[in-house]
Image 1 (tube, rainbow, N blue to C red):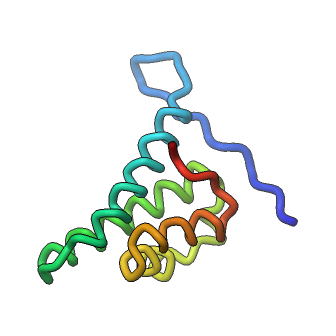
Image 2: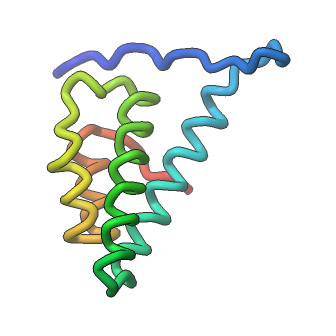
Length: 101
């Protein structure tokens, strides 16, 4: 069993607060909603832009949960693109991440 590193703290230049919880929440919800949207995208152009957005969100979720070193970015993004919400759930399970509310 691998030990996950602590999350990085995220600070804004004009605020003393750690925004990592907010960042995690937004990254997780963004990826969840994108995975659900994959199920509805029909056009080739829409699929291209959605694939790019899913890839960026996968990278963000990996970073905030500390598994970016073991992430297979393209394969994990394609899992969500090909399987939609089910792929999102598989992605979370693969890395041991709890689903966003």
